[in-house]
Image 1 (cartoon, helix red, strand yellow):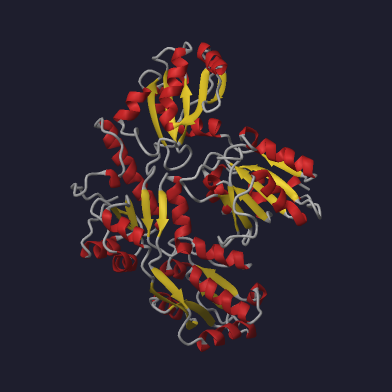
Image 2: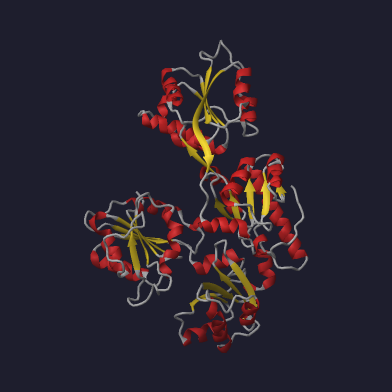
Length: 568
């Protein structure tokens, strides 16, 4: 039994102090995800809430910081001021602002499991130790789940190694609390120094090191928003960092208080970072990409885009509603139970959901599929069936489409097939390709409207403005209907936005709506479309570097700039 599964005390509960890492949700450990999934109460500062909340169970109570951005979260008590809300973001019964340790204790009462999430690693958090000691004093059992410390994770994502084969010494300094003696010691050292500070205090920290003996030409790198797609790194020296940030128009800025990690020493030399900067050199790094599909359809595509460094923004263009008359669907589901069908074919996640909901309405579960062969088109459809407890018997070996399914579908054989009928739950606007093909193979088909697709409601005003104003770097169109629906509910994307289409028919529709198509998938696949966009971004980046120009995103270009049409 792992510590995260230990039973909580009836009166004292249990607290897990958990390191949420420096920002990338992918850096959470397996132990962290396990602890979050069983938590009754989640206590977290705002900057880590989005990282950990996705892994918490539904309905978990959440303790977050005071949402007023103008207030100092560390003012007064010396510990973070926290506001208590539940899963629906309504005010809970605890006082709105309390000492963090007392909040943890109160949250643990009644045997509840509490996860106290901190940025980076609990061992390096300023206040976590005080809260652990409070647990000890109150007799509350606790455990610690380490996380990736920002001082280690951020340089790794910036392409800045901290040690080499010669075993360079590494020192870590928090500039906010460093004493004169500390600066004197690290200034006299020639090892690598990792400084935690703020953007507007980098130059002051560099000055402290020079005054303590470090040479002004010592290289350093400064990284803000490390491990996230907002990450940005500057390379300079101790003597030039102030001028570098000024020339980059980073300072002065109202965001000068943002935390940064500065690495001082030969390991942060520009030539070496140019070779090792794996994260910021991803083909779509920092690109804000619009994915106009349903959330379920967009899931795998968004994951692929993230792997290229992009920031996907999903905007549903269709909404799914029940059929206007449910009798046909009800008869078909009853036919499943009574043995009317030999096969059932699912062509979308929505079809799986429609049948599952009807099953639940009748008190049925996956066991009702016993003796029935199940076909599925597409990876997400197959996953939805597996989640329902059904393993598909047939998935297209080639193209994931109705045509691909027909390529592998066996013809009806009266000797081996006791029943000649197929149940096909589909959308109201589905094409007849699959029905016609199955009939040609000798099958009888019950083509049933399981759900209706209608144009989705318009996205929020800020999203519409970003679409029309050039706030997105690219948009992926996976069908002609996504083009028509997006333009209909949100307006036409700005001309600086890269337009990527899944095939010629979709590209033609985009051009009919006045859009210039930049990227086309080599084959009709969402995965190939994302891959084509990544190749476009890679070539764009290489061209900028070859010309000696800064690498920028399309949305950073001058509005109205002309772009050449490129297809891949």
